[in-house]
Image: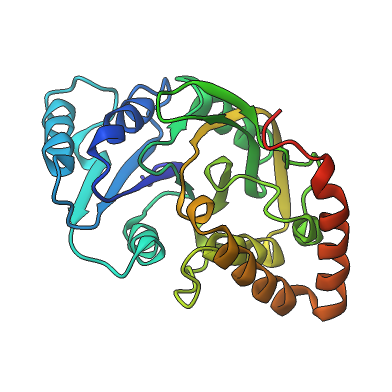
Length: 258
């Protein structure tokens, strides 16, 4: 029987942060999951950490069995290529990316999600809020773009209003990431998902802790250029220009976290 959720972690030379991510998954009160780690041939202690927890899983130290813990370590073409590998390995009904440094919000988060699915079995997407943390796990607050209670594709004219670590997508409609985008392929991916999804179910709760210091934060100009191109593809030039005008007018009054 396939697990309800495939939780996928992408990692590369992130041994400093990986263990907290692993524990946030393995300590879930619900075991209706499989855990997939995709490592990009790290040169630090990443694979040593993964093997440690693979051994602990095999010794029944956690609720999941050995067949629910899988990993690979090989060179890739970057983050989104690795994410595609994770998608192709997944067997669960839903996929959920919790990358190295990020955490599931608490030990009961998956149980909350599975319960929501029992109430809304036709859901194609489940999503909730994210708490922003720094590299020391200190809470910094919510993103200024908090997830709306009603989510559809046009919601994304305001940007990526749902943190990528707080959206679960039915695997049967999850596309691969477009590798022409190096920084903002996640925004394109969510646009495609919401073009296909029927019922998008809101979870009024934090479901992830997102560690800042990501690729897009370090290369913001390139990220904005890619996002403009993606938005134009999905919404047309006029809607994209109008959305950017509104975003520019609001920007001086927005706080990074709140």
